[in-house]
Length: 301
Image (cartoon, rainbow, N blue to C red; front, side):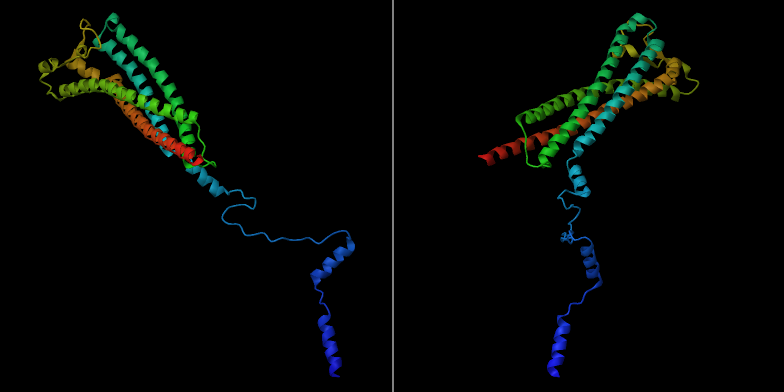
């Protein structure tokens, strides 16, 4: 009896329990003899945002791209565009208003200020050229900043630079220094009309502050524009006194020209600051490129 019970337990253990999924698989194999069971492989868990193909995720790509942005050159480009636009636009309109004031108030004879009119027209054409040149130069410097920043930070694989690339970077450093010195002169020159208009405006304020019964002393307060050298000494009338001077300061042309010259001077100052930032950024990138190129040559040998 015991041996029979043991045999029955052994037979029950040897019997295979067939589950429902296995029955479904068996039926599938019976229907499609040539098919094979699908083999599923374990896919390892992903780390971060890296895909199974080894391609970087969106976050890593964005961080890498942001790391290659030359922020100093970008700020300098925005500041340079803004400064040049203010200087050229406001300076052009202010010069036209200055000619109108001279013709109406200080020089009624056209031949007296003919040379000044030609010089102002030439300056207006120069302003067009300055605006076009700095628009292109700012874009080129920004592109050069992207190139040198990517090369310095080695964002695109192995560090590689050529002698031609370093020479171009050095040329931009030299040209930016020259333009910075030139714009210092432009900034100083743009302060001259601001000084002249400020003197005229302060004289008008003195006339307005006088009491109403002091008309005789008000007529003795004059502004002689000939002393600034912009019109000859034989120009008629050449100066404005008393109520005529006060009326000139109240005109929209004088008020607009005065403030536009101030804005143009501020734009020239902003351009000088932008060129200083360009100088620092390009000099630093050029020095690092030169140092890394020497280090790369030393490691090869």
